[in-house]
Length: 167
Image (cartoon, helix red, strand yellow):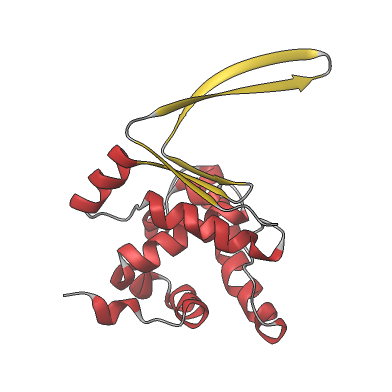
């Protein structure tokens, strides 16, 4: 039986993380804006509400549900469940742009068009997919202008042209 849960906290939540490396254990606390794991999505309402009223590029709700979509095929790897015939093009476009962003983020200069995606998208392929999904829904005109291939891949995957829904 699959468990699916959405938890909405009114304000920031601190989580503890225990890590072990070579016999050394460290405990750290960190605040989250949202999280998706084990068929559970956690949303911090204060942050989600602020993002809804002050549209920019970020949207924690879209971001976390993008992770859930990514995980629908059993792995959180930046490849949501797509038709086998579309996998090569998806990989070329998304992972090609991820690698370029990652290179820019490591140098931390000359961001150019990659500033739209930001350094968090360079964390890994799963975060890249979640961030470009945010941009697809929150700032589609900018995404299409700077990354037309990414926009088109997401448009085909989500089966919606988000630019048509902007004032």
